[in-house]
Length: 338
Image 1 (tube, rainbow, N blue to C red):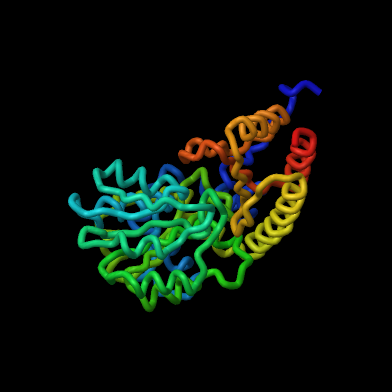
Image 2 (spheres, rainbow, N blue to C red):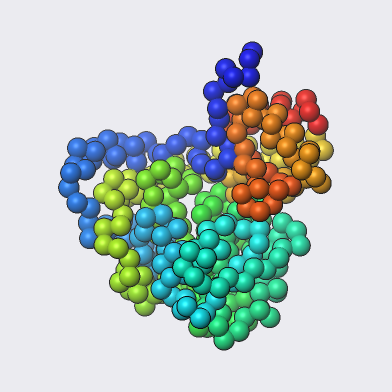
């Protein structure tokens, strides 16, 4: 078969390969005829449903147009022009990007491997430090900070420094030592938790997310955000998606099974695969030649993975967990070139 006849399979953006839940899709179809109507000033119903899901008060929920809106609001309004944020070098690029976009200083902590070391953060905190950002599980490595480590960090730093735990992939976590961040937030008001509907809920294209924070922080976020920043379809889809627990559980179960299979097969083929708690696998290489060869071979089979040059790491790739068929195609392709 000619390589150009393959239908491209997206394995580069960590999307749910099964798309949105049936309930979310049905809701979108139901409300599409009402898109001439303005959305809510503040999506109170979605706030309430997110609160119920997380066992918190609606006063602790801030709904947003994707979690990036909250990242940008925190960076621009909670961090002064002469203050700074701290983040890691091999993590989600939005934190550093938001700091640069808003003219804020960003101190980058270099990771010696795929794992965070929170002990590296504490000595860097000073009077100008206002926020610490990290993804948990981390994007792109799939590693995570456990409960004890996060609590230790929160105890070790001044309580006027916000700690932002971006938990976009939390629904995919299977390790029991992962933080109960919602309970930690009740103990530490400077902890802000970010969640998204873009990953396991399959709603990346309509931009919907939320934060869990103290009542004071939520009030400030809602004061500075643009009114009606969440569009009507996103609001209604989010309301349906967060209640479709069966779909989320099925997606998480599929991911756990396929993630373990893909990790095992690629490791046996000789690849240096990092164990993951997300819906993707991170593979570092010794040189760009080997990395480029893998990316090209997969692309020729219609398998589009993430070349992490965009993260500033030109010797590594990230492969999203796809359908069973897509994952088998990845294994078959790489078994022929390694």
